[in-house]
Length: 113
Length: 118
Image (cartoon, rainbow over all chains, first blue to last red; front, top):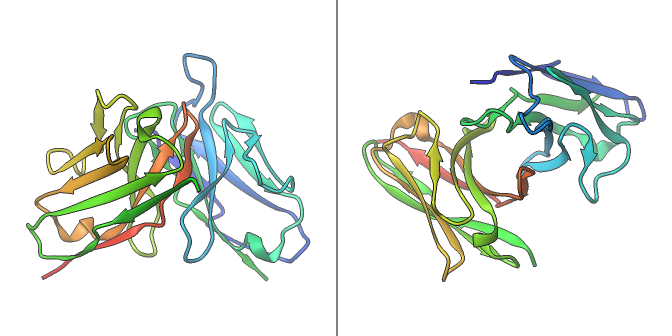
């Protein structure tokens, strides 16, 4: 199974400051079709998860442009340029290149300092 | 409105059974792969099962294989998860989610809590 390791697991950030979350995979996430199926999700307190980014860097409709995804192979990053109060929650990376199973990272809890 | 609504969660004794439902509205289930995932309270997300858009194939996580069955009723536009031989470690919020052609989980239900305890 593909193991996704996120860091940090806890991320205290001052409002208006940037934030960055790393996701490292135990094997390359490049599919035989050439695509890399690495996604990012946000889960606000008490809510269902919401997809932010698919295939490494494609932002979902309605997601603010302060969120961006990057990376390749085994190393990926989610960046927030300026953290806002509504960004509080847990962020997960997830891969669907090598399945079953579809796998998630452990989650990174973003909080406001 | 495009949405997924789960139901059927509750308290069940170890060894018991429960069937979860996920009613889709605003779109046709048969056009998408559909998944079940779960999240123990305060913990991370875990994929459980998927059913292909045409219903021809199903896949399960090792932890539920042989105990859980995913299915759907196209007439009712509803996804199901039959859970048998439940264990304490199956206690979790259960979510259904839509998979749009290798762009997974663009739509989630609100979740339903299953508690396995005597």
